[in-house]
Length: 456
Image 1: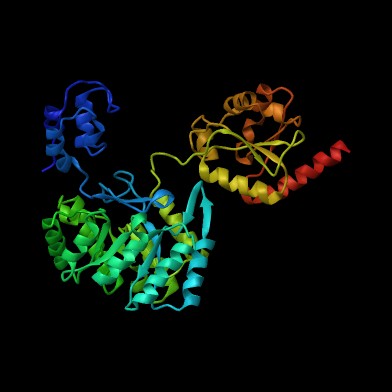
Image 2: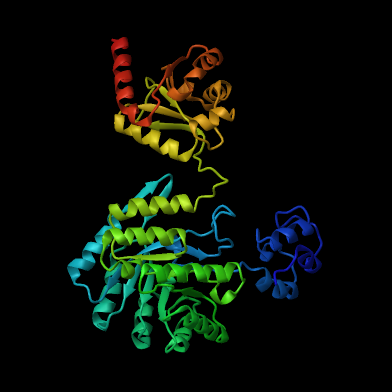
């Protein structure tokens, strides 16, 4: 049974020191009970109290860390089934499968594809995060595969998919310092698997024929004192796999059963059976519910663009708009003769507008005031993107010192602001821009030609 705030408060130091970030010990205790913070945030909690409270107040789903350095990722730690209840915590990660049964050309192509599909979307890097390395029976080729991936310098965490204990021991030494995932614990080998991973506390992937067997297997692993697990709900088809994933998550979060309170790995490549489009559809499904790691056969832009965009949308806090820093951004190497274009700090708007300006090849100063992280019309309706706020930002940003051009282009959808801005910015000429971003390159090129002609 979950502890109440008062139960936690009774074991707190009652100092009201604020070192935990909350004004009182009672406030902190209530937040811990609600799952909004961890009991370890209190630096003055006694060892005895921590021992009593740590397990009872931990999230129903364990949080695991895989990989090292720039390739380190957190999995699990979720507390709700639905995004509208509370934002999800740790986004799922995508893996590409490579096997010792593949020829060199196939392996090299997949490695090159992983390198190629690496881009920024709304300020976030989009790439494959995990190399899933499968042992299919050829030990020499498997060792060669692991070394090839490591020597390729692709920026990934590693998942060794191997049920052969002797082979795994030898191969694990190659990537042991990378904090890899070890996948392949089953009802026959789980004791030996735990022995291999326990000293380094590596994440252990667990598989079984059905949910009942998986549950029993996890219980047996718990009896060995090991709880760094990743569960595999993958079945023979989409329906079975989806049912398993949902059941595991519901049992963990709704029933509070910690035997199923772990991240998951879904082999979308196996379910899709070689159908590339089906693989994307299945991966989309498990991005939403509830794959912590989703294994793909390969990666290219036709797979990456929909999957990475969906993941970014699902794992963005709906109560916190994605924003960029309010400031002046130079695009296309502007100089003292370049005009200024203003828009809002909503990240999606910024990256779209910045991209269209780059496409126009017109040097431009892009002014981004604080608009609350909203879109243009929403920010205007909320009073966060008005004549006064835009004018004050232009005055305070120092853009007047960067350019002698006194042309300020505003979004066409807020053309009504033109007069107000000109009243607040003497000497500036406010130009009404386009309604749609796709029209911006032509508009800017034409506008730039007019400026050049006027100077001549």
